[in-house]
Length: 116
Image 1 (cartoon, rainbow, N blue to C red):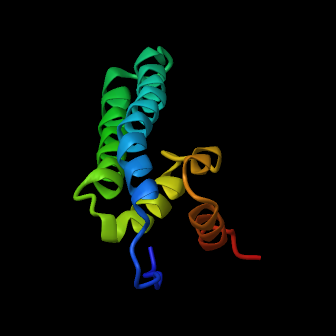
Image 2 (image 1 turned 135 degrees about the vertical axis):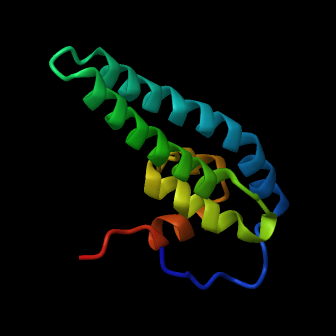
């Protein structure tokens, strides 16, 4: 992901508290969805055990990578970067942004707009 220039001032206290409260909820929701995908792979009787194993191994690696990118080393100064990453991997939705200030919501929406 390319570097995004952030404002020099960090997020306000309300946004930082909301982020810290929301992060574990988002993690659990994300993992619930991903575990369902893994269960589907396991249940696919049309594929050999070896195929299912290697598909699972690949998926678990992708999940672990996303978790590390989104959850490792949270700091207030990098909160916006973590939010963008969470949005990018589907851990956070635009609706989840409602927990934050209008300024932060608008900024996150602007920075994550698809390019035309």
